[in-house]
Amino acid sequence: MISKLIELGKKIENEHVENNLSFADLAYKILEDFKIETSLPDLEEDLAKWMLESNLPTQLNVYNSFGQPPVTVFNNGEFVIDLYFWMHADTSIHGHSFSGAFKVLYGRSVHELYSVKNLKSYSHDVIRTEIQREEVKVLKPGHSKKILPGELFHHRVVHLDNPTVTLCIRTCNDTTIPQWHHFENGLSILKREIDESVYKKLFYFDYLYSKDNDVGYKFLISFIESIDASVAMN
Image 1 (cartoon, rainbow, N blue to C red):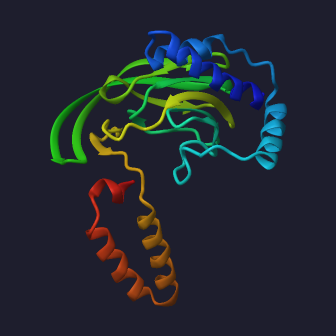
Image 2: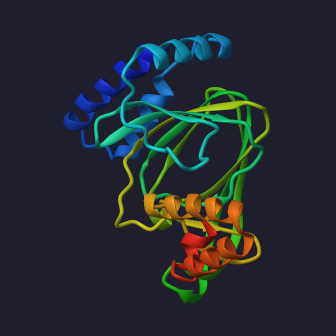
Image 3: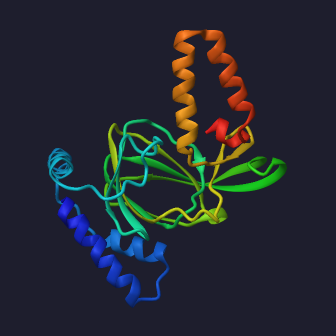
């Protein structure tokens, strides 16, 4: 199974050059044609063997919980092929800073499409919005969906089965396209990739707090005051 996904990545490299399809259209077409004949236990065994015996490509999601876990099986610097193992029932309503498509391999999910209207800006990374659900569909194994970037696509995927496994072909993040997370109370925050320095400061806070609560607390307050609201929320 994993070798087939790597071959799929090489096929996409060639087809992306040869045709005029957008990447989302190409990824969707590829996934629609891609058939799964492997059981989940066989996939898990194959993936475990590959992870232990191979040099893994650069992993796209390392510190966040988008997938539990996410595993990048192909990465050429322009696009990736990811496997996502979903153990949690829900994700937030969100947009994306990339394009592509995903396909349900195992399990079921409720897919919801939303329209989002900006009402008020509190800062460059926090806004008040009005969101409205436009479409609901239960996705079963074999169902695919396109992913469009930025304001073109806002969705939520509620995973019904534990685990649900999805296969995603997507471009690498475009830092010029904001990625927003929307909450049903009307708050929207910019999705941020957390910098290594933020993690180091949190780890050091943990150290200080374990020795002296007051010292650790003062460090934490000063740290939070120095970062953007969306970084703190993320």
